[in-house]
Image (cartoon, rainbow, N blue to C red; front, side):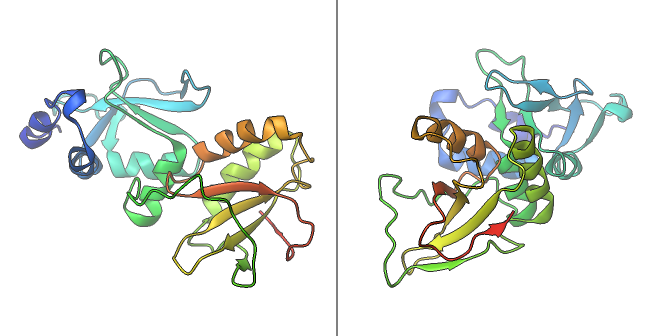
Length: 220
């Protein structure tokens, strides 16, 4: 049920919502119960599938259409579906969770980590660069299955990946093999990366790289 604390928190106007507001919202949201508005996922304006929900407000609500947020999020994490909270709210839904945010929460308890990388930084390969396959914790099997299916639907039969770390910090680039993706033209790279980003936690860095002169990539 929606609590007094959550109800009060949602009264904050959009323009006054900052990182502190968002972090508290995520905690309250994860402890709430949700009512499922439509049983089948709906396609959002961005083309991705979302489960439409709202906060369960009364104990008399049909129990068959509501459940704990954490149980619903776990279910979504195995199916490659995002979540929209209160889609009828004007002018925007209360919140939109990408699939990547959902499996980030399942793995770490955080929908996002507020440690933005410098995206303008060019990935450089030198003698200090470390390579390896993504670990099961970094890229769990249920999420790999979802991404594999998405790529299969795009005609990519055998996607390959490699983790690259070019600094001493705990930051990595998840690199997809260009060759395994069918060597798409450069003009299509940004679109591919944007699509992949929806499936990955917001703090992950993703890139497309040729396998030439690099250690072996591993099958996703």
